[in-house]
Length: 239
Image (cartoon, rainbow, N blue to C red; front, side):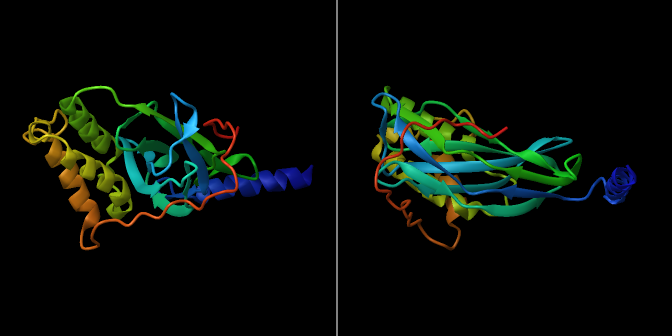
């Protein structure tokens, strides 16, 4: 009994000594997934996959990191592990795929959990773990103008304004911009709903320019091939 009381006393002392406004530690474990054509249930090779991690604070939420990678011939991709900090709390990731001629079927969200001290009290640390993800896409059906508008909307939905490392998104924006250039100039020049005073091409070009900086165009490296394509996997997080 004394041991339990002593442990509780230590826990309360730890919590009391932790500053309320101290930066929280954010830990995102490596996670993998596969991009699937929802109409055929087959893997999509060469898809570009963006992950955008966010954390909450008093004013809403902010992006803390964004990365993009290229899937292998079997549709598989991998997001690396990383550790960071935020003045907010919580951690979640939005995973978005892209490939020319396709559209995203649904947004995949992966939620992290607070780490506990002695299994009872928050340690001001948030960890994101995920089982293998299933990310679905389907063929795009629509006009050139509709495609250009979709590309601009997709780019805006993945931008990380607050993140300090914009270069991680060049793989994603490279592909979108290359497809945008293949569309008629009339489609590229239409006004963007999410970028006042700019065209849909301006949206993608501006985001790409921010990620490139002085590093030049991206040279994406595909995820290493596995002996066989993965079986059905669900996008869910452990309880």
